[in-house]
Image 1 (cartoon, rainbow, N blue to C red):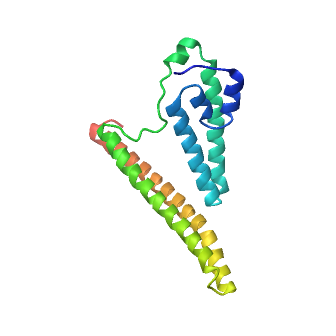
Image 2 (image 1 turned 60 degrees about the vertical axis):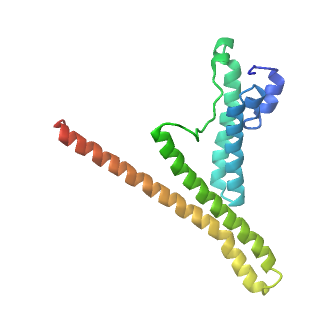
Image 3 (image 1 turned 45 degrees about the vertical axis):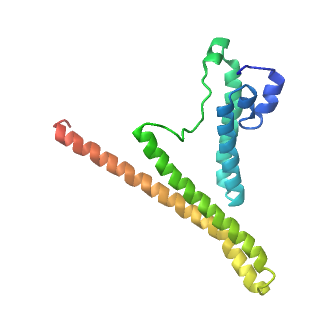
Length: 183
């Protein structure tokens, strides 16, 4: 049951992304916000990628102010707010199914890469006992920087794909304008 509840506890819970929404009864909003915050925070810490921490900070601010904006709504508006997930992983439309399939592959690749990194770090700890110290430190230094390099390459590839997609979209729009005879 959603309700505005005690303002002191709402303030306390709003300091943790998602907890304020859950305290007010918006479980789906709260769980998805908290999951997103923790996932981005975990990735940023494990890859030591400080710029990604800024995204988690934005999520923190969003969640904090979202709770207080919900609380400032009139009772009628507050009770009309629908509790819904931030991301819709299951959608029955054709576009939704295609979106789900694409995101599922991306999530699978990210999980596999994280598993490889974690396994490698565990193996590296074991290798410390068996490798000469100098070789171990070269391997350790390389494996420390490799995830950052891979993330950087991934970001560049994503940006290039976005630019290509925009160019194709502009080309299609120009082609459609030419067929219509309007310019």
